[in-house]
Length: 361
Image (cartoon, rainbow, N blue to C red; front, side, top):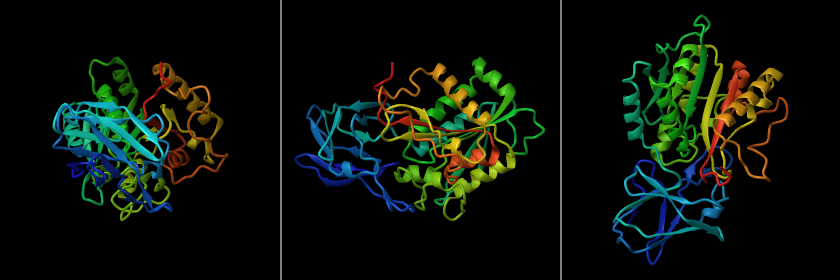
């Protein structure tokens, strides 16, 4: 039995005998493409332990991002511990064979990060004196959009000019299927709230941090890759967000405008095809970009590389990341470009791989 009736579930069943044949579920998109299809998450039950099962996603080659070479499916028995299963992509089909040790197994494009887990982590974080939780408003499906205010002590959402401290803003999961962003936020917030972490202690003497741990909770629960409940791609909504189409962006922009300044903004994402972590150069193409901002972008990337040697390791052939836009031509509907143009600070989109990083080490 195959079922996708779970938080973040998405798959279409074609056949279960003799092999399990599946198709990717389409999500409505208000962009010209009309639909996205990439994310999958499902439960296989009534399995016979010790008996191999063959799986095939027969339309993987027709997905939004069809380069599956080097990708391996994620599997778990308990939705906590996840492992990769050797997979192959040929003739437009993604195939894997798995011999279960239990009668039920979960398979996913990447380890999911459920709404339930998000609420439990927010509840845990708010018990730390460095953290206050605020609800900015509601999504189209009526879910709360949470913000963490982290500082020593936590700062209010109010004009920043007189605080004497830097303003750092982080948000994740504009694209809800990019679940690595939530796992990144877990580690980031965990360090900020660790009283024994000297780096975090020094940072919070100089800066207040505002974190949106999940910018698209509706899309996550619905099993979407890139859109919210209305089919809007939130990372193309920043120029003109609307409460009836993209309330998540409307509410985040409203909070940013109240703060009045952002020294650093980090938008955390995940890339379907590139097998390494990198920072997008999109903000370097905004009209307001200056040599000083370009230099700050380079210094940040260099510091990130020193802290994590696996950062931006594409191998000997491929250039790093996405092409830089022509001067003044960046798309201001994209978050990092809009923030760079509006506030003039360091605006960063961090992209992490679905595939893992075979070039690391």
